[in-house]
Image (cartoon, rainbow, N blue to C red; front, side, top):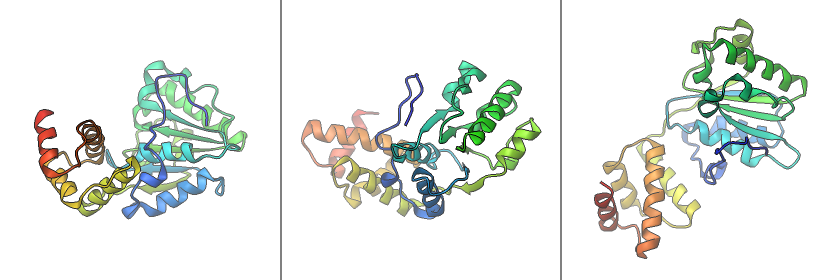
Length: 230
């Protein structure tokens, strides 16, 4: 997998095994197929913030085999660099473009993305896109680009319910090498912001704190850490 020459790297935790499928199993199955080169069509994944779009795009790149040239391009980070940031990626087998929303309506960026799309297809590759909107609702002004973007497989990611959030936290904990007690997971869900990005960040912080203090993640210990952290 190629990485862009910026301070942007794939998160170690952004792999398929740490993403709780829940209601999004079809999207995950398809993206796993992309990563193993068993499908040859791109996809558009959309959904609310913290539904796991970035996680899944990075998971595809992390799972890509040595014969599959894949790259993750976060457009929110790249957009300040201008349309030229999209040059030179056309020979990749898989390009995962995150946050396409941010360049919608920017004529120069849209033209650059259209050229990139054509280059990738000409070289037999495929593209993955993520946005908060369905393709038909995105304010793309270049008609040819809009029609190309709407041609792929579309998956809407659904936010996890509370039981699934708890299971996702336990899954993340196991990936980090510890078990998260059920009662502690429920406590976190009651006390913290309920979006998965925030919950994961707090879980990572609690893990570090528990290792430093050599204490388990009991509710009293978690309460202490949360109080110290404001």
